[in-house]
Amino acid sequence: MKERNSGYQALVSVLQFNEQGLMPTVIQDAKTKQVLTLCYLNHLALEQSLREGKVYVYRRSQNRLMLKGETSGHIQLIKGVLVDCEGKSLVLLVQPHVAGCHTGYFTCYFRHLSKSGAVKTVGKRVFDPEKVYRA
Image (cartoon, rainbow, N blue to C red):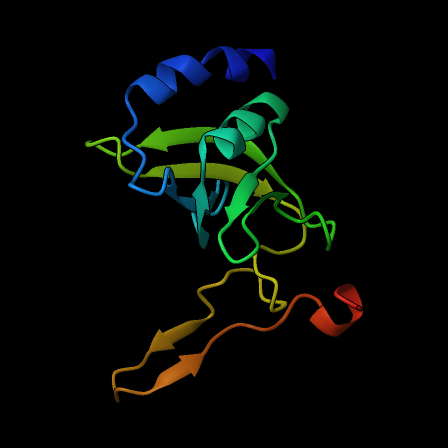
């Protein structure tokens, strides 16, 4: 992962983190191109992600850095990094392990707006969150 870490300074030089020091980041399956989630990275989360080749996120609700999947074991290995035209958001292309959503679905985008105007659940859960996230 040293190659990725060596690119950290070059990457940061073209990024514009928001007022809170965060970068909106889309997590996308590198193979299927399915969007898994939207999260936020601060400088430390980005640096750690590039160094280890695993997705680290900044949890706004907990005000802390967290390895994506640290509780469930559903880590995501980074296969590529895309930067938008203004440097205001990222896409991390990943190889997911099991699922990307803590609710048990493969993606956090498991609901869609139907033609009738109703929001419907699509897909099936790939794991039981009650068994994975026991207190």
